[in-house]
Image 1 (tube, one colour):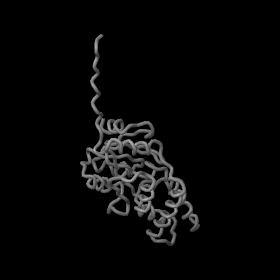
Image 2: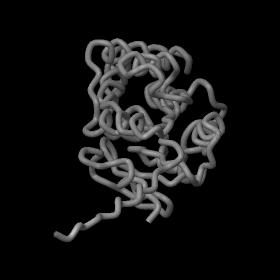
Image 3: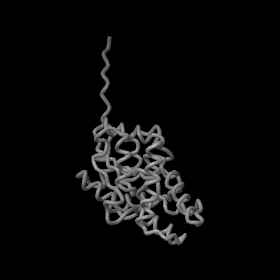
Image 4: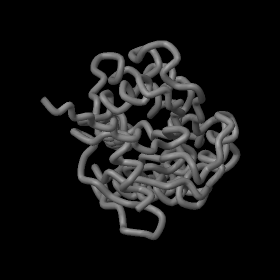
Length: 228
């Protein structure tokens, strides 16, 4: 009887770190933000459209607040608008945290493979803390939020900061984003990027690949797609 030996397949290449946006990428919270925008604007007798809401997806909260104030003329400061929106979204999230398809599974996979994860979001720390409460302790080795950076997305600072905190080179990490501004932030930081469009279309740009969903995608597959 012949004995046949099968060589084990070499391990698939993986990124040195996984850098993830939050709103619209990990959790389906963009509708929460839009609902709070409509409620706030209408409470001051203003008019807000779906197109207006889409125009600020993925942008820093202070930028979004400035657009709302300029558009409606409401008598609130930028910080007051931010806090009103943020408070409403956090309360909605506490009642129901809607994961995006495949997002939780990707986080779990990264943990199993020993790939450190960073949360890179323009939401503020108070909201990021709510997400950290519903995942295993230590899921995120670094958290970069909109209130801890000088320049928000699409500036590269958020992703450069995440890489620095993790001690990895940007070109060896993988970013997952759902918005044009987030995608451009990661690409500008020279991080291989996967865009998963959700609420708004994401243009095809050099340095970022696109997939329709994270569901059923392995970390190795996403890395191969981003670096092809």
